[in-house]
Image (cartoon, rainbow, N blue to C red; front, side, top):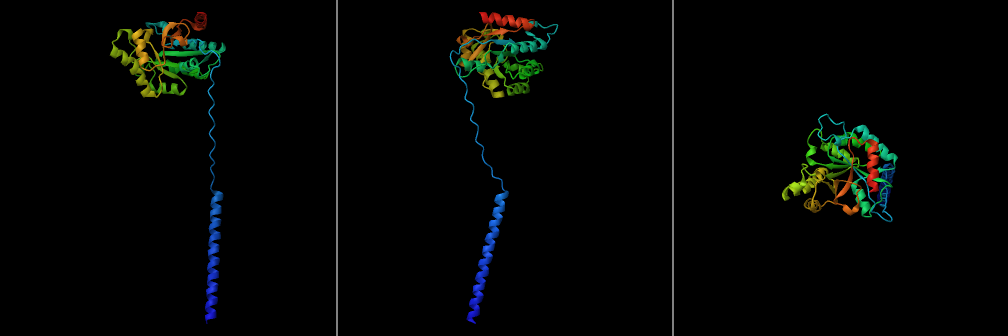
Length: 284
């Protein structure tokens, strides 16, 4: 009897071991199938950013900054018709500039060149648009974007509200297209005739308002109607700007960062007038 008990125990142990082994094999097969069907994600190495090219040799060359206002046909009762440049004239001027080898860049890029931090195209030019009219969005943006050019919007904060102004959504799309947004005060007063508190509000307040609303640096200031004096320049510096543009005719140079010259583009200039103005500015 003891012999049969021992045999049955041995058989049971053998079957148990066999079933256990089979279970292990089945489990291994299951994990093998799972491993075969589960995709393996391999992290791709991040591309190294291209090093910023720095200028070699002198980097204080003057740069033309064009000054535009409204890109539209002037209405019959316009008080300042010369501030209106017809859309066809603007497109022709940009086409002529490109044909002459010019390439539009932001003012910040010019500043970085002057500081030896970044190279510029062979013939850089800045196209600035004062006040903030909706034609900056409807006319200037598509013309410049077709050439992958950036513009500079000198924004009077009050002009975000009226129908004829650059509404916030327009400004955001211009920023997305590579435009620079700089400050042109809150309400466009003659800064030489306001008190210290109002001066600070218009100069520093406009920068803060644009930065808060659009999340951009606002590194430069544009004097309303080109009016400034020592107190105004001091307020601009105190507000943290890197430079400021005027209505003084000529090319911009790093020697006068807070009184940068510009070239005014008027409604009667066309291509020939712009060509003459650039020639005069370059010869000065």
